[in-house]
Every structure is written in structure tokens, then in C-alpha cells.
Length: 359
Ligand SMILES: Nc1ncnc2c1ncn2[C@@H]1O[C@H](COP(=O)(O)OP(=O)(O)OP(=O)(O)O)[C@@H](O)[C@H]1O
Ligand SMILES: [Mg+2]
Image (cartoon, rainbow, N blue to C red; front, top):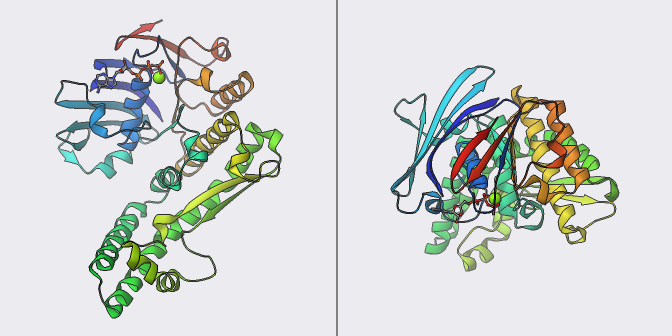
């Protein structure tokens, strides 16, 4: 898929931006604080309804403005799509084809963008929540039932947590343990199925980007011990859950991990290796999307040249060329690795929130 038009209003320091993008590489260059990352962030928001940067969503809205609005025209295999997303009074409003508001899930399904940015190493060194969120974005696009299963599970989880806090009786908790286990089953299966497809792509990407670390092994953890059912795991931890007032086992605790022969623990990785690892994770997810949906998602690379060494940059450029995926890339200057590419390139100069196309 290709993002052909991006319209941003009141996103951070970008008051009003209308961009026509090329199908190949779109480079955003300019000094620090100019608004380069914010352009990529605008596109990312249309695909995630959440930034890749930390902080509450309301800090995205330009200081002094009441509303932020984003619009994209996307060329998909199935035809042209227009999507819009606005943030006002602490809530999102999504649109498709300028029609009346649609639910966020319907809009997000129409546009896929993966992003590698200076915070991506968190995927490796951070807590399980970011890895779950990352995985679930892929599951959402590949498994149509994911959203409904996930909602159903969260409802059951909320209910069990409320009962734990209220000190409900054993028989009532028996019923909710069974309900939670039933809701967990389809969700756990969708995630596991997705990970089974993701694992070989990821292992192969890791071999490309981190050959010095030897063979990689990746594994998925469902959120409770493999040897028992969730129902049984919940019964075993009930006393502990009562004391804590929340449920400590279940798919909301799922996680996945990577180990290398030469780096059996994640603490063995250097910061640069964490970044290369995160990049392999992001690109493998793009490859799985392409395999499952028949078209590549857009690939955003924020600060490419300052995050990766020359060899890793070359690998990404080769991957972009081989796949034909559209890319949005930011940096202080045009990176050397992109100076002699044969893909269509458009360079945009960004300064003080204004963007000019350098043709
Ligand atoms: N809510 C907001 N309202 C107005 N300006 C904001 C808001 N949030 C951030 N900014 C400003 O937006 C500008 C753009 O930030 P951005 O991170 O996009 O810059 P950048 O070009 O990527 O810089 P760098 O090269 O340092 O990564 C910064 O000057 C920042 O202070
Ligand atoms: Mg930046």
C-alpha cells in the first residue's frame, strides 16, 4: 500500500501540512526540533491511534489548539481509501471516506505502517507491555476476530479483578475463573498462531541483522505456566490474586522473547544490538503483513542514520528496494546510504514546522 497524501493539522509544531508523497522513499530532513519526527508520527497515528513516543495523547495536540486532525489518502490493492482521525476533548474520532464517524478499529484496519525509531530498543530491553502491544498490532491485521476476542477477554478480566477487590466468595470466583479461561482460549490461540507465522521471518531477519550473535531462538509465553490450564493456574494463584487485588495469570501477561547463542540473555546485548534486533522485529512484522495481506505496509524509519551504523543502514535500504515498500525516513541530512538509490525519492526540508519539497 502507498500513502499518497498526508494532511496534518495542529499536530505538535505542525500547524497545517499538506504533503504529496512518492511511492518510493520520502525523506524528511532538517535541524533538531524542526518537526521531522512529528510528520512520521502523524502517519503512524493513522495506523495505531497511539504515538510511538511516550506521553499522553493530548500532548500531541499543538499547544493552544483545541483539535488535532489527520487525513490520509492511501492506494491499496483493493482501491483508494481515505481515512481521517481527529483528537478533541481527550477523545479520538475516526472517519473513512469523509463519512460520518466510524469506530476506531474499522479505520485502523485500512492503513498499516510500521515504524523504527530511537525508542524502538524498548521492544527488547523494556517491559512486556510494549512487546504485547507490538505483537497485537500484527495479530489485529492478520486475524479478523482478534479485536472481538480481545474485548471479550478484557471484560471478563475487569469483572474478575472487581470481584477480587470486593472479596467475593469462592464459588462466585469459580464461575469467573471459568469465564475468564473461556475468553482467554480464542485470544491465546490467535496470538500463538500469529507468533508461529512470525517466528521464522523473525529468525531469518535476526540472522541478517545480527549475524555475529549466532543462531537466534524466539519463544512465546502465553501468560500462565504451559503445563496447566488457565483455569487451574487461576485457582492456584487465587489467594495471591486476592491479596494483590488483581489477576496475575492470563493472556494480559503474555510475552515473547529472543535469545542468541552468543547472547543468551537480553542483558548481553549492546544498545546498538538492541536497536538492530528491534529493527529486525519491525521488518519481520512488515514481511508477515505482506505475506498475509498481499501488500507491504508503509515503513517509517525515524532518524535512520543516527540510530544505525552504515552496514545496517545498507541492509535496510536493500530490503526497501527488494520489497518495493514505501518508506518515510527522517534525518538531519540525506543519509549517504540513500544518495544513489534507483527508487523514486522525494526530499522534504523541514524547518520550524514548515515543510518544503525539494524536487
Ligand atoms: N504539543 C505541542 N505543541 C507545540 N509544539 C510541540 C508540541 N509537542 C512538541 N512540540 C515541538 O515540536 C517540535 C518538533 O518536534 P520533533 O520531535 O518532530 O522534531 P524533529 O525535527 O524530529 O527533531 P530532532 O531532530 O531533534 O529529532 C519541537 O520543537 C517540539 O518542542
Ligand atoms: Mg526527531
